[in-house]
Amino acid sequence: MVRIDNLYGNALRQLKSDDPAVKSTAIESLMNEELSDEVAQAACSLVEDPDKGVRNSVDLMLSLNPSPLIPFHLVRYISSSEIATRNLAGEILLKIGVNSIDAMLDYLKIANNDDKKFLIDILGLIGDEKAGPAILDVLKNNYNDNVVMACIEALGNLHYTEGIETILLIYERNELFKPTIIEAIGKIGTTKALEFIFLKYNEEDELTKFSMIESLGLVGNEEAFFFLLSELNEIDGPLTWPTVESIYLLKEKYSLNVPYDERMKNMVLKTVEEASDKYKKAAANLLTLFDGEDTYVACLKVFGDDYETDEIIKPKIFEKPKTFFEVLSSTLNQSSTNLKNLLELTLEVISIEDGAFKNYLSSIQIRNLTDTFTRCLDNPDEEVRKLATEILFAFDQKIALLFLDKILEDDNVWNKLRLLEILGNIESPEAEQGISKLANDKEEMVSERAKFIQAHKSVA
Image 1: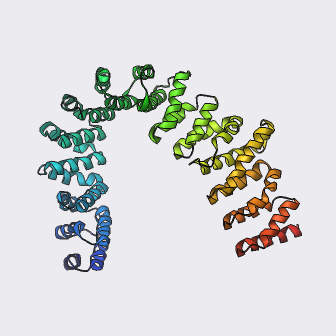
Image 2 (image 1 turned 135 degrees about the vertical axis):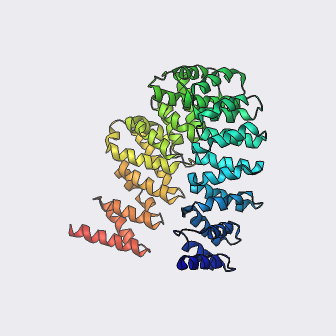
Image 3 (image 1 turned 45 degrees about the vertical axis):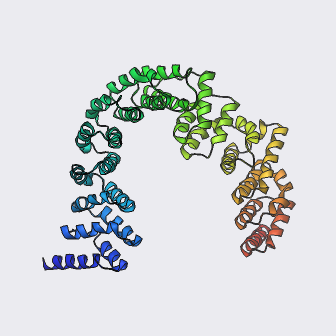
């Protein structure tokens, strides 16, 4: 007991020190210690400390120490007039997660509307249904718009089915509530939610319809699938995006067939080209169902924007490399923001094809492609130049050697070393001359590697 008292006493003195280094050291020493009420209170107070290092230390310790006392002392700092303190306290409570819920629910009873909204937002992000009854009670008895919106959103995140009746009762109270209500009931996902969306759909503006269509993808049935297909005749612009996504989600959920017509294809193409990544993923999946050069062009335009979408597109490219190469030269240009990504994809396709592409491409197509790749040798991006070099040698070694002098002008060390790797595997006078030039390079690492390759070739 004496040792524990001494530990707490020393910790308290250090936590109240004027020296930030002493405070940080004290905080870090408490990382795995059981805390007394007084020490927990003192540690939590340091979320207000002016020193960033102290705040970083207390953030880590309070987030990881399992003491149940921490949330109860920390939660009051969400009422701070200092935004940084308020946000830090909220972030730590969120990191603590379900173990901070009781403290937040207690504080919710005495909090003002601003703090209520803040706490309910955190509870919604934690997503534990335990907070549902308290949030629903606030929703029933509070008429502050910001608090009401926070409650609706949180109950949706909690998938709190007991809240759906109350949520629907306030649907007509404020136009601004409607998109949030629709999104929330979509997450909750009951038959009642689906019926309500169908009932209100034709009455609403585009913003609310946007949320309704997204929700149909979550809670919809086969009826919703065919309803959305019929809506493709009526909608345009951004409403296309959630419609395509929801059609895809319902197709996957119920193993339904998407019509392979021009209307559907055009909607999918527009979504791939115009929408945000969230909707592109679904559209890219649907795009793989269609053929035609325009689908490949659309795929190449967005390739590199998002890793998950790229992984959906790749099998489509590998399935018909002939079409890929036919549209590549017209798609690939120096101003493309995804130039590097397309070159990486090209190198991958060439590697898989292992020279077979030469059997189905005309001499003019091969010439156009090599012209496209050689233009990349002047690109300011060193990675683009390296990829262009690798592609040229993999695509047509004879043509690549014709441009060897140009490639040798590259002043990037790693590009020169990669060129040496390539030339080391080629038996030709041009390759030997290239290696000889690099043996006299001003970069020692390059010249030594070139001399090593020369020596190895002479022995062989």
